[in-house]
Amino acid sequence: MVKKLIPQQDTGWGLIFRLNDLWREVEKVAPKGEYDQWSFKLDRIWCNLLYRNELDIKTDENKKITSIKLSDEDFEIKEFLDNQIHEVKSKLKKERKVDNPDKSGIAKIKREYYNALMLKDIWLRKFMRELGLYLKEMERDPSKAIYGGAG
Image (cartoon, rainbow, N blue to C red):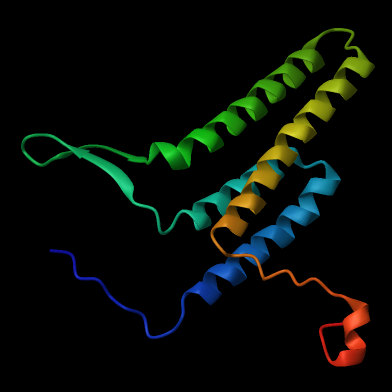
């Protein structure tokens, strides 16, 4: 029997601070074109977002663990995005190895690489919003400020 501990402090704040630090790092490496670091930081964010989700643990008849994996729902989207990134990255490496690489072709592949990473980035931000980890957005209406409303 696993005993569940109930922390006295709200651990959600720790998660939010960790995520904010990781997003800050993403914002540093992405504009510099450090694509491997960008992807790695996004993976770290994804790991932090899955802490609540159950693992799919398979056992044999002797109750020995035979496999542990993320649920299909968690894994499918990320695997698809990572495969796109891997394919574009492989294409870029291949093009760079050519004796006389086409510079416009390399530029086009770099744009594809950037767009694949940006899609992963956007998906994670949307995932965070679904989990309620973004601060509430407020609509400001300056015309209501006169009457004590949000302005």
